[in-house]
Image (cartoon, rainbow over all chains, first blue to last red; front, side, top):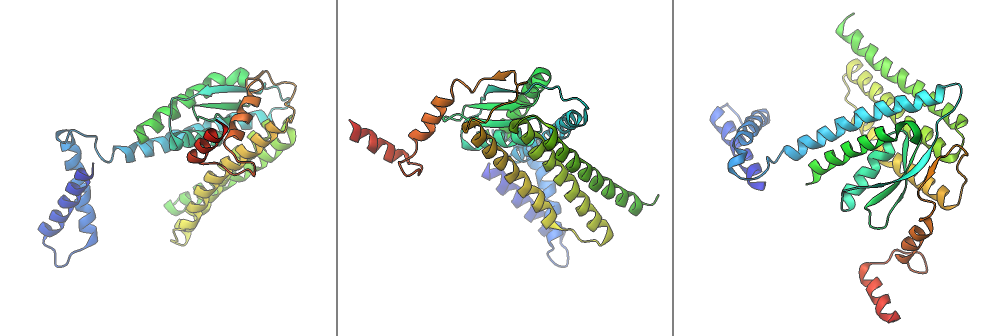
Length: 160
Length: 145
């Protein structure tokens, strides 16, 4: 992957020099870098590796997914708050995650905590399972599990 | 409506919805039955409220005065990093201190294994409460043998 980055910088440098402006300007370099991204993306399968910016793109995708979940579940929680009668059934359940390592489990725990309606109460010593307190197990456990799976997949795309 | 007016309107709308959300989560803290459900209202909805309010302020300053305040964006990032940690620690401490869950709770899978979880956590610490490294654990094991 460093090879792809170097080639991209090299293309940008060539672009700046070949443009033949009166003085070297940074904006031309950036434009060249953008052109280089396109070229490297089209050629990356000849290197036999992943495209080096694909991690960056999947990070952005993770952020978008997170924002969507944040807004959706905030709506659910706020709906419970303004209902005249409180009738949800909270509960604590175990969730076994396929993620491994400090960074991945921490990221998932952070995302779960930030989505309204779910709190991580305890993480097991090995970090392979969470105990999650959900606000409405009765109604929304399936939706919660689905969004957990979605987060997991998105995190894996970034880290692996 | 001009472009500037529209942007200003969006900024105002973001700030207003952030304020309403903060108010609702405050009401939620009052109304919910136990500490676990209260934390849902307290820590979570308010993160979204902070996000909306700061984003509105950012857009307002950017369009009104042409000033792109990076500090507001940094504020969002740090709230998002610290709020979940605080919420987790409070709830974990509450559970370990045996704070009762509300009567409507229908599921508690941690109940049976809490003792084991506590023991596992204590096995990692010295008598003074510091976290041990792997080498030190090995050493202790050898001493016991």
